[in-house]
Image (cartoon, rainbow, N blue to C red; front, top):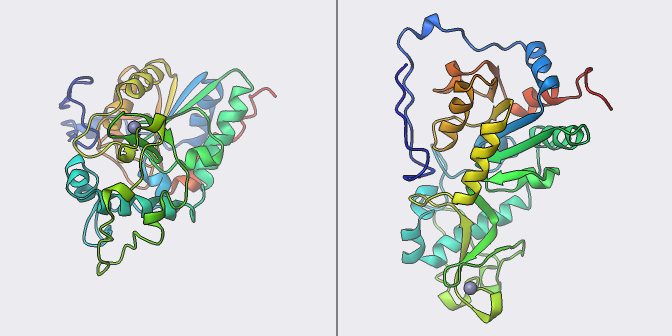
Length: 305
Ligand SMILES: [Zn+2]
């Protein structure tokens, strides 16, 4: 099997694409099973479950990604705005983009996939079992669905970080500052608001007043090493792993599940399509995860209480 391995620590770029080659003679390998009863049998015995989630889960709540065909905010896609260079060139424009995304989230709600994960997490915790969510999503829909053990490896739209003192804080203000009120319209003919940097969101920590930025991982930036270490720990100790709504081509999630599978631990993929990693997994459940996940995570007859 030919897999291009990337260093797990060190060079870390969340958006680096990893091309996992299909193994030669893959037709000889067992195809992943879509036997729900067989999955449920393993699920009923698992003590530590890791659930990796990606954009597909949010897409079912109508959350725009600003990537791919038609995914534009004004004239730009996410990769042109979500970078330290874009922010230092034009912090007002980048804040308009994030203000818009934050405000859009007020109109979105968790879908049955988020709710099934949260319900399963709560139910299994009462049985002394753990379910940890490792999410690439920045929209906090898992938290709003009621999940509490969430590792947000790409940060959150609702956290800010000061570029002067580094202080990070949760921030749910709407609008985030007076100058952004009514700004951020996505139409391509909208002019930049050109807000003065003094009027953009500013740090309130100990009179610092530095410029705030969204605490999300931008293109070209490293992941938070503490969160990554915690995610590795969860994935190293899980006895069942679910990969939900993610294409498994974006690092580091691309590495997580195949590494779990390589330990011989069952991995179940829930996705709209096959991914480059599908053949490595024990199970693949095809379709919208809002439909496939709730029956998979529902109470099993073998569960106590
Ligand atoms: Zn500060």
